[in-house]
Image (cartoon, rainbow, N blue to C red; front, side, top):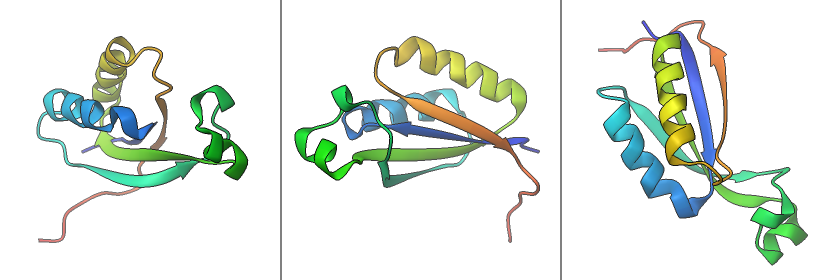
Length: 100
């Protein structure tokens, strides 16, 4: 059973690289990716229009993992995405399952 939902937010410019890394590193785990907006992004990482609007285009990925898987995955991301502005957070799951 998975213990956490790990959310990862990245700029669209690295979306494909991130998804490829997750497909390789996450094994058979199912994850989702959704276009979204980020607020509070450092201005140096935002286009001019994004600075005016106060939000930047982003992609949010959510994946269910155990604590051990999360530690391993975050290490892979730190090595592969250093300096890219990738952000993450995680929260414990109350329940998960599949309706078959």
